[in-house]
Length: 427
Image (tube, rainbow, N blue to C red; front, side, top):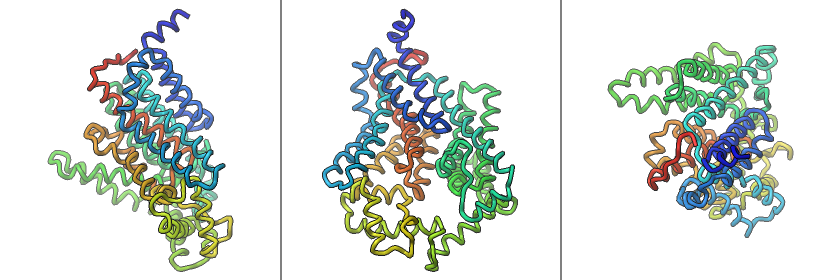
């Protein structure tokens, strides 16, 4: 009991609880879904055990990243004035609670030490690589059957049942974060080697399993990294080499991997069904294009405040009843684009609130200098072009955790420095 009291007064208890919350959240993203819900609860417990909570409380309201996350929840509450699907609205409010809990934890709990942050990052990268390796092994057991599934537009699910879009994003993030963590001051030679191996495993997994999402994100990140290097005299050759890799990589993958070749051919065929006006009931991308056109018709009638985030599905289904593209009821899908989804549910106001959350960190020099944040925002902003990440529970949790761990915590550290608050690296 005495040790527990001492840990509380030193801040160690709060710090360890926040660390446990982070580890649980990553474990939940990788495999144990129940941990995703437990993580924010442990984070709040970390806040309550901060011995300097009263002193630190104003820091929450000075944290712009936390306030913008809170604005998302506030806007959702505002839509109660015009929502019609109350059951869906209440469910959305419940789903959005982590937007409050996670930023609270990263602003008001005793911050993680450098070694603890390294551990969490390494756990995410290694865990994603291990799941990727196991999924590749599953693919190699019967590659012919897997390639046939890819040919008809299906994706091999991760062995831990992570949705393929979310898994592709996690693989791409792990590739770049793994390479960055190799340069961490606390990373020894062994850890640097393991990080490189994990990063390469993630890149290989994306290619072998032919995840469209992962491949686009991987090469988008490489392109974004390569272009600035061209203007630096000492690194121009590296930039040219990366550009060659970005150009040659997809071509080599198409020529050497049957899974990639089948994915490209099926993607082209899928889109053609929509552009040529054919039956699109059995084609994923074609149905998404039809959903975008349907959403556009709804947005034009509700451009300022939208139909309400809880009412987007009902609004789309109603519009489909006027123009159904020949789709059966079960094939009338929601829009797969986070920007259009935000515009549909919240109009111009809702879209601006979401863009503030996503892009505002890039207006801060400290965030622009942080490569971890840069890749996180770039890849998230890219995947949102074809995925409504806030509607997918695992993608929502991935974004909120990454946003809290990188952006909210980073701004909290900056505010502590300005206020002269000294927090020991190891509380």
